Image 1: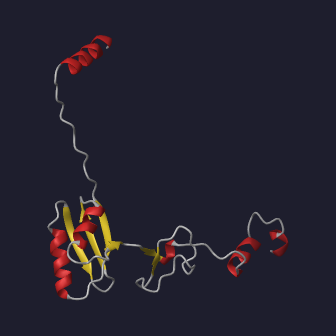
Image 2: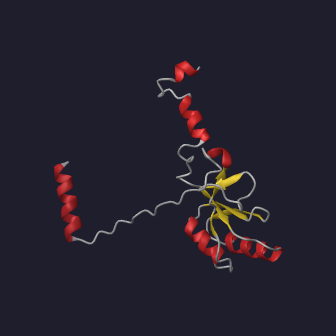
Image 3: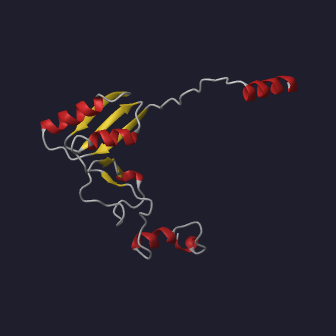
Length: 152
């Protein structure tokens, strides 16, 4: 092995040996974008712009939820730029998750009046207010509370 390594290093240093580098393959993913869609023309314009992208397999537009879903081998940033190029400058990546996925869906950081039904905004810091009723009840029956056995 030592001789082969020496020879490969020698030839690569002294001669221009071009080895083709493999391109990284894009992964199949689903990109959700929030964009305000008012009419059929807006919907058609967005659908045509995104479906003409290289790698886009399917495009779904939900006008009621103001949501565009693109599936395929696409980059989320490029899809967002393509949607913004249609004149929808306030387009953004889908900021909502189902409210069942959040511990405190009605906390100040998560609750959003403009969110579609059943969704809240993604928020890492959506916690209950310290000293709130929920927090007190949860700590009352906690395993870490030494007095929990007397309450039960």
